[in-house]
Image (cartoon, rainbow, N blue to C red; front, side):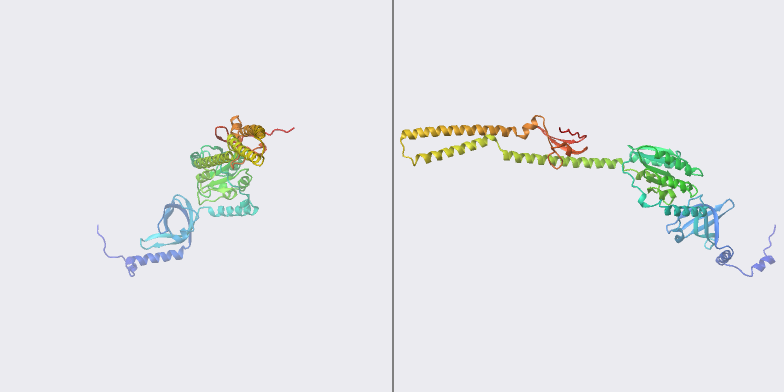
Length: 435
């Protein structure tokens, strides 16, 4: 076999102009620009990557072909979702040739999930309607109770979202009961199923918060949560509802109707109650505060007792003081009577004897009176009363409590007994009827 090394006439005609590679790529790019651009293409995302510069590179393909795509930082920053491999999308851009590699390339200026256009318009119309009716008003949204008695969950019984929610709740609030009301979360039957599941939970007693959750997906997957009937069922809830549907970038009508939106199902579980360890730390802090207050109250009460004891003093000391005063008065009286009077010794002795007897009687009477006073003072000693089984009650500020009507259930009370003090809490108040 031999080869003709000479060009054929056709090749000779084309060879009259010899192209540079770059120039030919540029010419092809110009031809594509004038023939096709701008162009919209629908296909499946493949090999999606985002460079550190912010530019995105991927391919879009179908069963018959594949096309390299580049989406520069400015356009990529306007994406309302994170494209994933295998996701069906519609892209809009300009077709050209990447001269450095001689590859056909589509420079994407915008991207949306396939079929999003019509659904998104429906979403916006329903959102505007419900917003005008006030279903999204912040004034009707309720705060989530920090310590719910029961937590209701509406989702698919087989969904990964249920596992995520249960795992988070078991870790954070294992002491709170969880009630599942299963529902269909995708497809045409989803809105009615979700509404029925919510209505069933509305009838369960002591459910203080409801989690309406579903994992991520396309707008078609989440479309069941963009239903008007479901939205109206949510706003009729007797307790707060937390919506945790899709990922952080996904928004549904239920997010706007719910009392609180969580970016993910796990986040919804984390927002529905205060963790148990936080509550335990709070109890420890309250216990320490109560102990300090009790000690301070005891110290103040002891200080008050010391002050009262100092004022009352010992009865025997008071008796000795009064006896000394009487002796001094007797001496002054005797001197006053004996000096100015010039009387006989007999009369003086008689007077002195009478005076001594009178003084003795007076002293005895005063002694008896002081003894009786001392006994009364001892009977008034608070410690004696406490030793007989009584208690001295006061509030946390040290104010004495003398009437049961001033107390209320769960009020802390300090009780002073004969041998110490006790911190009490009122459980019930019963008043005696006065006749």
